[in-house]
Length: 166
Image: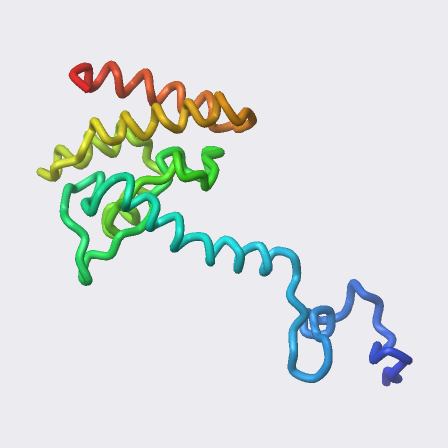
């Protein structure tokens, strides 16, 4: 049997306490950890970023060309995926419909443009190249992004080879 100690601890070491015991503050409340605060702040900025991207790119999906509506909601798609080191900067985000964003996953922009064309969609290659170029300029100005930089340079070379008219 464990006895209650001063401060509400029941004698178990911190490592052996349950998640509820570690994060509880008072009765029925959870203390917010740094990750949840960061996620909440990122969520509040997501709508602002989406509005900015729509103002910049227009009301159509960059990958399939369909116009956004109440049924076809816009989302922000990262040109350089987060898992490849792409940040959530405005220059790295484009407007895409939910279907295209989910279907693309972590496929590179050049490969996804080819897939979209094979599916009979009307992707906007000029807009993709413009966004990749703007993101490359932002990385050059702000610095950092050591994981995203080689991926981005490779995508720009492939875009210029694949779509020379852009």
